[in-house]
Length: 246
Length: 257
Image 1 (cartoon, rainbow over the protein chains, first blue to last red):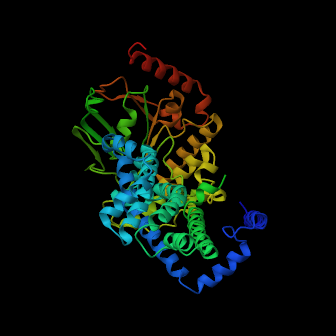
Image 2 (cartoon, rainbow over the protein chains, first blue to last red):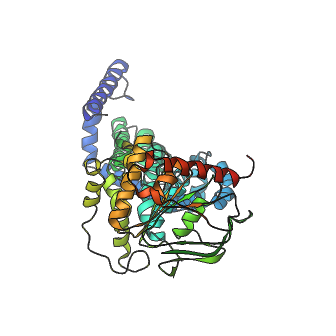
Image 3 (cartoon, one colour):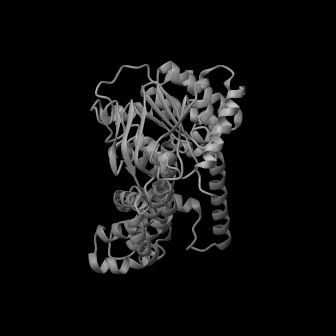
């Protein structure tokens, strides 16, 4: 997609929002201009702090999920025995919507960042684990043989084969789960915390009834999701250029 | 150069592929290993490459018993030997990059790395310099094998092993790569061992031909092919005779299909 097309799509969506707001004439749907004004005002207030709290939770859980999920996926993909042993467990756990664990994690780990980080970690971890496992299992034995014949031991195989082979899997996993992570972050931040965009949105919406401020939070959360999505996109082009040539 | 002494090798839970097998290759020779599928020719090549190990017996290369892939041995496979995420040039550089990665430790690479001109010379020589920035899925089968050969030659080998390297190519590409390989073999004074299931290929590539049969292989059946080096061999009577005789020997050596 070209930048121009994305720009026009954004303009079209804003116009649609504007039209809906003008037709409804209801305080629960303010116009984009009204929200923009409040967004800019909130930016000078405590919105950036909430944004950073949310960003930190997503970033920490992503790094944790890659650090644990990618090596585990590589090992499972390369060992038929381990894969056979664990795949029934994964088969059962993978489809469970991890968001149902939010109350349990809150009960176990209480308030604070840990339960929020853990819940996003769980979502990303399984996605990365499964995709890296499948990509790693698809590495041809011939490729490993021929790279080993060039003198590669374990470390060089990791550097020249396993790492580049699993990068696209990690990025695909992130691309698929960025949306879900941000959604679940919102849910997790609606309870037992006073930091983060999820809290900010529900506090302004259902306690203060400050709808423009609530929308400013929604815009910030959307920007967080979009930003992460764009970043994954950019990284993919940067790190796996071979996937984009025909 | 290569000495296979009393080699016995079996995959787990199956009968031996080689049983007390002996075979010798002199420096600078070109050998074709010919046999039906399942006869153990690829196994033998992997044993020579140091990627598999005998159950008993020994494989010596340059009088050294083989315990791991040897830095001066190049291996070229039929397919899938190249990194799909790397360009032609990056693939050709892989052997050198792995050596840089470990440094001259004498284990993963030679203990003294000869200063060489890098891969550019080989990209030129193999006619793939113009496509050096392309990825593997963007180039033809023949160009892929040229890349694999460039990667091997860049590491300055003295033994080159090829496993069905030309089998998936069309006839003309195959012939030109066979000729190129023989030229490079002579130029670089390489010892060349190619594995093939194609009688015609064994006849044009092997100055000596090792015939393998249904396992277990207990002795080296060797066919001499002195005419192979001569010009016009591919269209000579001698070539046709050789193919015919190889065919009948393969048929004799094989159990009823």
